[in-house]
Length: 339
Image (cartoon, rainbow, N blue to C red; front, side):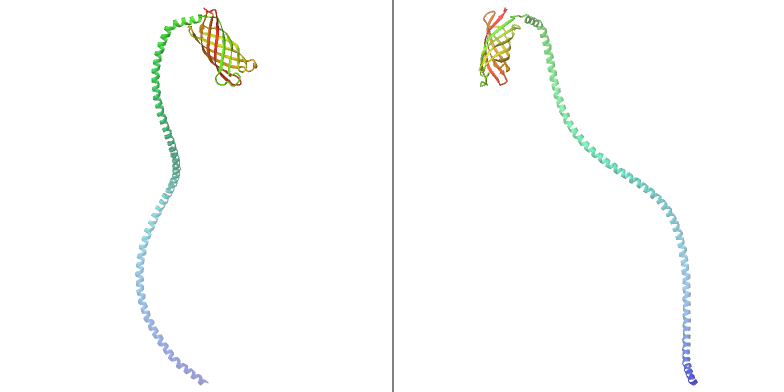
């Protein structure tokens, strides 16, 4: 057993020796390689150290330059900060100015709007004034034309007034000249007394002119008597009464008679006008109103008596109708106290 063990140990030792020898060789080679590597690394480290020194020197220079730049930049920053503060103050002031300007702008906008409104109003007022001005111009032209016409009329009126003044002067002179004659004539008229009393008895006849188919409208005839006074030798006034027969009945006239005699001649013309009532004998409550103007001639046959003939238009009206006639009068005149 020991022998086996020894053999085994010998075999192990025999295998261990080459291994150790190979291991030594490897270690020696590794050490040599490591040494060479270390030598190379040392050289590289020396080169790197030199580069590091150079780099450090360069970095220190750059650091100093950067520090200088940093100080300059810090100084510039401080200056810029001071300028910024100034600019902030200026900006605040500008903001305040901008706010004030904005408010002023708003006020200006409002004023502009108000001015626009006032301008529009002024335009409308101007148009209205222009229209009124045109109207006034036309009115002025019309008034000027009218004024010219009035001036012409005034000129004509002045000439007429002058003519009338001249005429008045002439009339005054004529009146002065005729005053004596007029006074004498008026005195003679006042003192004239041809007769105090007159009586006129007349036969009347008439024929209807238009409406003849109703009662009291076809014809009438009768007798009347007028008793009156001479006012002077021309005028006579009196009260008349009589009996008139119509186609419809009998009436009693009651009227006033006025006559004007022209200057006395062989056949003296005269004007007469009668007016009054015709009283119906069958019904007195419905009188007939009438007027009877006309003309005539009379001729004296003695100092106290004269004959007259007259013709006129007889117009009457009652409640039924209106009628008209042409009438004729033939009468005897008695004058009391004639000279």
